[in-house]
Every structure is written in structure tokens, then in C-alpha cells.
Image (cartoon, rainbow, N blue to C red; front, side, top):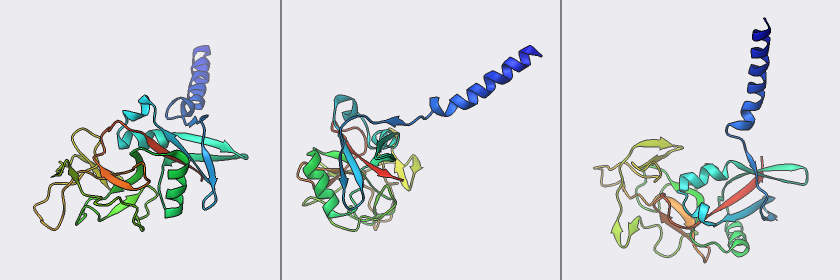
Length: 209
């Protein structure tokens, strides 16, 4: 009887502690800029060696594990989604990006490199922040091509499990390039890039949800 009782206590303690151990959110204690007047959001740039080795998907997962507290409210993190040109300019001027991941990716079925781009908040990219000649789906002037493995939120991944990509398709109306994640350059404009690690950082946005 005593053994059963002890086992029951241990089970309760395990169930109570489980959410705190597995998949626990992390309060970010570093510096942020904000709040931005349009959405009351805060922003931070992650560019140390630890973060430069992250793929787009790795950065996305890490960003979504973070939160901050401001004024009694909790703000949850995600890769920065530039909804407006003024928000984009604010982050560029405040954080001095250098080819940092954004919460932007291209959905399969696009008819051209510039078609069918989405933000992680499931909004379409409705304004043009691309640099001249971007997006181009090219690496050193050569068209990129990828192989489908599995899906994530409307995107697909190549065999390394990191790059968002397209299924090679015989339909000439559909492009098959694999530069399908967005990043912000130093001048604030965007470029498309293969979503595997690239040696730079990423920008996290914090919003009250």
C-alpha cells in the first residue's frame, strides 16, 4: 500500500513538472528595442556564433521558445515578420541587420521566384521589400533545384531536413528553385536564400498574444 502511495505521489510530481521540463519556454534577458508604435512589438537580433550556425527552421524553433515580460504582459517570440515598410525600416535602423533570417518563406506551387511568399503569421507578403534582382532562386548565377522530403506549414524540406524547397516538377509553369527563405540585408532590403545554415544571425519579434 505504501509503495503504491509513493508511486502515486511521484506520478503527480512528474505530471506537474513535465511541462516545465519538456518544451519549456525561456525568458529572454537580453536587450530589445521597442515598443514599435504600429503593433507595440519588441525586437532583438541574435548574431553570436551559436546563432550563426542555425538554419532557418532552427532559428524559427528557437525564436518561438522565447518570451519577454514588459509592463505586466508576456510577449512571445517568433522570427520577425515585416508586415509594413515602416516596421521593416524601424528594425533595420534599430538593429543593423546583416543577412539575418526573417519569418518569411515561399510556399510550394509558385510560378516564379517572386510568387507565393508568406509570413509566419500566415499573411501574404503584400509590399515589395526585395533588393534589386531578388528573389532570384540563384546561387552564383546558377538556378537552384531541390528534392521534396516532407512538409512544414505549407513549406517542404530537402534531404538535409533544413531547406524549405519545391518538388521538382515537369510542369514548366512551376519553378523548382530552393532559395525559399527570406533574409534581411544590411540595407534593410530582402533576399531569398537556401534555408540551411548560412553563417549569419536572425531577428526575433516579440508580441503580446
